[in-house]
Length: 412
Figure 1: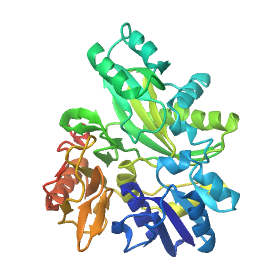
Figure 2: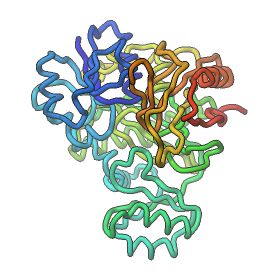
Figure 3: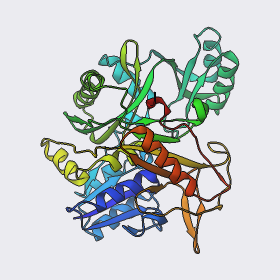
């Protein structure tokens, strides 16, 4: 079959790489893709992921069997709806169901209605009321701008002064909706869950992301500075409880409310003293969690998608190994950064997945904030981490930075 992957980043690079291993897939296209995919996919960078009509036309003309949508923006903008209207199969939810990621408020209200464990919250729709609220709220407090923010719309304010700064930043004008949340203490992890309406199959391997820019979880939130799997210090009983109390109930809630979700639901979970609670939902694979999870996955991703569509039993098969991924980002990210800096020393053999590089003549140069993920594999987290940082050291560039403590929480 012919498969079209939508997106440009490292998540889409691993999707193309993984689909290329499937005996069910004989040709892969990527829109707009990136130059690192060109040896395993036909890349069409002349079409933007925002050009929905052109994507639909392309899928029709090329007899695409499945479109797999990687990033959040095309999902919340309704690309799946346009493709499905032309009887093109899509792995990724329609616009209505993608609200689970597109609106923090939608997700919180749904969890509240169906008693799904999460932090207490308050929605505030203007800056004046927000400034009043932070005078009396408990600290730390978490501020989340409603809508998509590429992983950077969340601020943890430790005190009143930081909250004032956050309010001025998130309310770019006087009006807007920000969700203020109770700060939860605990260990975070990421659970990917296949969903087809009321049929729910969580991955039986979880990952842990590292959101903060710098070592020891310092600095601003980013789209993710590294990830690893499995997470050995979070046991199977916690996964079963997360499935029973969060994964199954949220899918059933959407189904009951008339939102037909088909795709992968990312559940960002924090393990508190009271048990697992939801931090966030995404309507697609996490990035960089997808890179480590799909590298560890031995079973056929395309077969899993077909089985999900048919609501057949899904059995995952995983390597007996640990995977650690370290993100190298442009200096200055998630703030201002320069582009066009040469990056070399890596190859495209499955140990590196490109997020923000493009070809300039014979060189790869930076084109984004997060640039390239270096992977390491080993019999445990310690050896996988060592191999990941060996892969990092091979990369030559003066323009990049990275965290040096990815996976440390799993190493006692």
